[in-house]
Length: 425
Image (cartoon, rainbow, N blue to C red; front, side):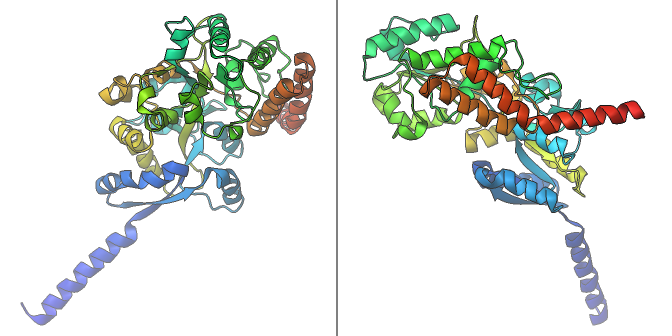
């Protein structure tokens, strides 16, 4: 081959490689905490299928994530795809920062709404539009000492509040004054929220503008929560006052604990071998039978500022495949949101995960307002005042309504302004 022909061929090949590299899209993906650490292990297969897409993952600590996202929004520096906690989705929808995904789902052969736990899917529907796709799910169930429950005269976990009260009372009588029937850390809002979501009364008005914590439903939930402390069934302390939850559970300091799916692996790993047969999980009891619980977890969103929305959706579709969700579960312990993934023997045959599967079919989303994070803090503060300062339920809930209504004042103004604009058009 003549030298000039060989040289020309090399130039053509180099130019082709350069064009291929320059045309490759880079998707920016922000993930939080542990998920950000391990998600990179799932990406080689995605990039093999989509050689024109490179995914750049940035891990963000949960403690800094909310502020970083708001700063990025203000500076027009949001990523293409992001993990958002389900309760954060309404806030970024209100900012008009996240894309609506209904059309993507309608044209997808991978993401099927009917294959998701309905209550979890519903957390992403804001202002009648789908804003995110569930990535993993979280809810709260009972972890309990089955041996101590049986010793107190109960062959199974309670299914109603009445059964739960009888079990708590019997266990406390059995274990004596130095131990307790249940641990309800005062700095955790989820147990009270779950009890509140079991009520027919909403926590906020239908437009999200007014508090409804003085309703009979929430007062009933708060009183039941406080009763566990009044009766001496629960110690009035935060989780920081417990040196090691798993050690105290193993020694029988408490018999019931409301927690999430990550603790399945923690209990398996941290409880001594002699106690591995003495614990189980169960759905939360409700006022009159099996009850609802919180609809937690994280979803994947596409920010409206993304210039690679099509590629971003391809990444979400990949993460939504049942097999990929099962790999993600193996890496993190996070539970998949798709019903089809739960047919896999690794989950279907896990006796501790079974309670979560049952509970996830009875979850309810928290109110979908941007102010919900602040409202949760006020709710938790109210519960602590009732328990530790013995504030009566009526006074506490009226004061909570007043504080929450002050938080929602701007929302009411915006709703009224929007109504005036609509009437003028």
